Image (tube, rainbow, N blue to C red; front, side, top):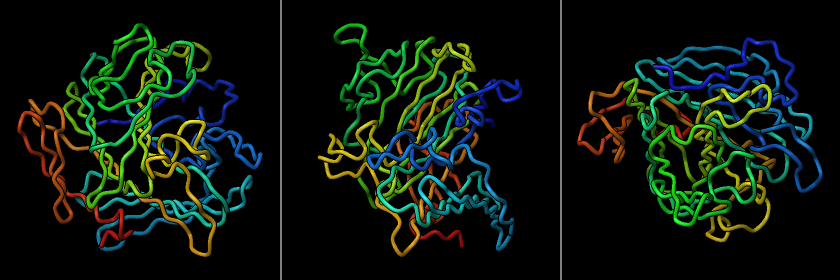
Length: 330
């Protein structure tokens, strides 16, 4: 299984001005997500210093079947410290991550930037998600070759408005599609008793990728769909990937009243108090049996989940989803 995207310019030695594009691959932590200018005037690189800076090694330790890699980063634009812990539990096809933020005082927009590899066959990647209460395509223009209508409300991933003509829609549960396009949208969830989830079934290669989160911390999921639609260097019309990015963010309006905050869902987080803020996240992948089409639901049990397909097949996966609340893998 190889669910994550690796940008095609990794070994080409190109001069790349946008720092975040240099290591574009896999998943990375963003603080602030999106980067750019904050309301107080401070300017961040794309997706923040955490996305493209060199982290310091703090150690590797194994205890009770859990191996933890610890890295640290001292941020400069907004003074603070981020401690990254990446954890592997014996027998689990999952990566458990925790980012502990100290300092960095004020409101900000944290997020993860998981970037998946798209199969070559159209429609071979099938997406599904836990219930969401609001979704929107990006207000304004994303790129020259975008296909989505601007600022259109989304109620169903199967019916995302396109800008070509009235009534035209994209099915964002079935990818890839629309070669030569770049699009951006986001959906938002309310906290629930169980983790919020996102799944991608790669029917061409026979596996399911999944992510689990606490929607009280990261209520949004951004869909960044890049299907050979950016022609400038280093993209050169060859990058094909899907970002499924769990965030606390809303396009260019994260710090202002917006359609999401009017629903009582935050799009920025206040940090920098006496206690560090921890953001926990789980990503994993598991082999899928033949005929496993698309995830219909996830059933949660102690230290395990069961992926249930629309075709009725069931795949049980050892996952300590309780970690999202407790911070413990014991």
